[in-house]
Structure formats: structure tokens, C-alpha cells
Length: 101
Image (cartoon, rainbow, N blue to C red; front, side, top):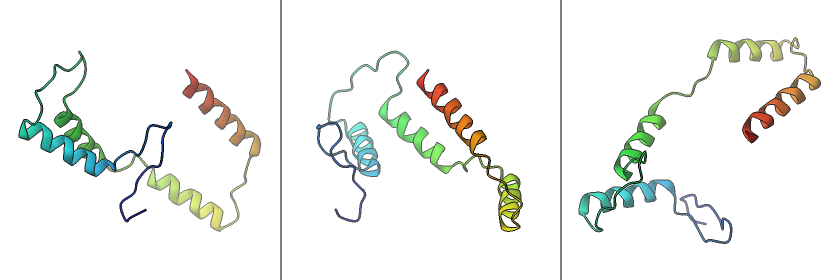
């Protein structure tokens, strides 16, 4: 594949365009009036609004507790961090249970 990332075949449907190219094509179609605008389903955002929202979300920093990360790195470096497999497994099961709901 070339320099831009592409997602392979998904569900036998075909290739999915990279997000940046899709956003540009949606924005240009919305501003050029290439197609007659369709009424959006209730609660749906127009493409331009979704593109703007995606840009705003991408610009925000990730919600990371940097103090906690630093403390964990220090504990690992000093050999004080004890791995608790039962706690890890429990957290994974809890997460999977919540995502299935």
C-alpha cells in the first residue's frame, strides 16, 4: 500500500477511504452543492457539523493522569510495582461485561 493508510476489505464490501480524504470529499461536496441536500434523520448532524466536531475532538488532549503515569513509571523502574494477575483479569472481565450491554 502507499503512504496513506488504508483499511483492507471490511465485511467483503471493499476498501474504505482514509478518513482525511473522506472528510475532504464530504466537505467539498457540501460546499459545492454537488448533490441535492437530503433531510437528515432526526438527531443526526450534517456532514459539515460532524467534520467540525471530529476536528475539535482530535485537537483536545487525551484524558491522561500524568501524575499517575509518572508514579507508575517510577515504581516499575525501582522494582516496586507488583503485577496482580487476578486484578487484571477481573478488570478485563468487568470491561467486557460493560461493553456487551
